[in-house]
Image (tube, rainbow, N blue to C red; front, side, top):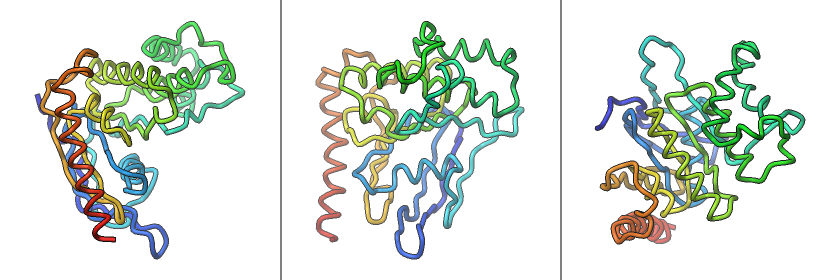
Length: 258
């Protein structure tokens, strides 16, 4: 069931310096509980849009509004970067503790939340390990746990699985869907992969480049969350073809324009 609007982007543009228009006139309404993928080629402004939503980049024009949480004043955003960005000198446990420590929570006060976050990503046994001892997939799990430990309402993920092998990526896709479903998260996920966007999302926002803008906003019609078996179904292939055709149309139009 569709929730209330939680994020509104109203004619948002972002210009770097005096020349590069990275995002142009982007308007989008994201509802509570949506799992949105930003899909498009490199340079189409996917990550820029995500970072503006997170408040990591200022908008040049337009507005981004995030509905306040009931009974709270903060936005409750969690962010997972493309690279795990872990502190190499700190244990897994201390890397996950970091956001709470920065928020003034004591180690004792944070202990149960850190343990819960590690349990949710399957890293309880690795709490005392260091990043150098972990695989790429495990490092990304730490990064997800660090985003989840603050118990966010909105999880922003900037192409987090692009560097991982297909099996690890597939497993982490399932984990993110499970966490989003269990916690009622609103997720915005940046990806280059049509297949990943179709499997994960309730909506796929196809973006075009030069300048970055919304070219299409497509609802994936299959009920969410989906089973692993759906990946090899005709229905999955049909949805992937529909999204791919939209993306191809965007790229063809760009080629003609330029």
